[in-house]
Length: 370
Length: 110
Image (cartoon, rainbow over all chains, first blue to last red; front, side, top):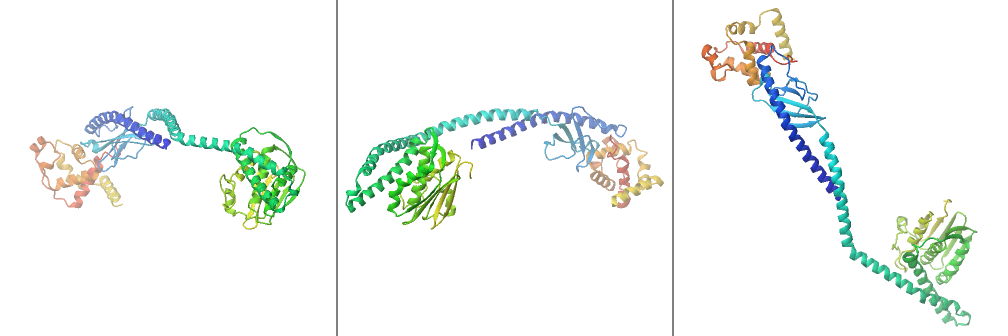
């Protein structure tokens, strides 16, 4: 918008400078024409004793009869537009003078001079200078106005962000207390009815805990410096599977693990978030009595579920933040966006293979093995 | 093509014998103080192009009048206007073509 406005103004300025230059040249060339007409008059009266066409070091000229037939020409460019008094083409300026008395039959005298391009260079320099200054001023003004108008919105975002951070922090203490107390309770002495109730509480608490960890990661932890260390991925996966076991059991989902000993150097918090989200999604979108197969080897980590799957055209969008394809399941739709952020940060590759109604396989390729 | 043949014929006529121009124009004009060359330039001053000059001459030769003459008042007062031509249109055109070729400016400037 700013560039278009500057371009338009530049064009207008260029045209006005061109007209100014032509107006200046018109005055000079009119004088040349006046002199040349007088010379033609003399030649007319002495013709045919004198046949040398009058020449001038300042310009060249050509004469044409009333039907535009060339009588004689010294001009470099023969093509003229007799309708325009002054015109520029191919590096020459032409001035057409109409004669009232046709000396030697001359109705039109065309004066030609080479186009002096210094005005053009000067104009372009001015356009570049003033255009640049105007552009910077416009940008600064735009920035100032944008800040002015966006301030209320930015304040709201900051307020919301602070609220989420505070709330997230406040969630941690009660959630930890719930999970810790569930762990310590002796389920063996409980009656079946109470044991099932406790298990439901445990599932709900773990679901909230996963969500809490995702939100904490997004709002607080992702900006932290990475603390990369060698991690035994197989062991981490086993721990996380064990953690999600209660959730999986509630949907009668069975885990199949094909795990080789693999060590990668990554930030533990990030790798945990990556694995948690892959497993959590595989449980969330799986069907009852389904299965989850986790394969880990030197090349890749893949998590395959037997869930609802995802349409092929939606696969490129599944890593977008806040995008959820199935609203029947809970969550904010941030899980896979976290996965994408982490794999992008570590330069890993991801592949999604999915078929609607059959399931989804998400494969992460370790660096240099894809 | 037609014009080219006409010019060729004029050139041949000029080379090998008297033309309609020499027979009908030159004898009378030789007696006048103003040359045919000067008269031609007077026509050029007013009519400019070949077509218009020829048309102007032809019209004057057929319908001579002081009001359309290119000559000065002094000349007209002294010699008057000529009598209307008795030549046919073809002869007239031929004579004017020769006249044009003889005194035209085209190709003579350098």
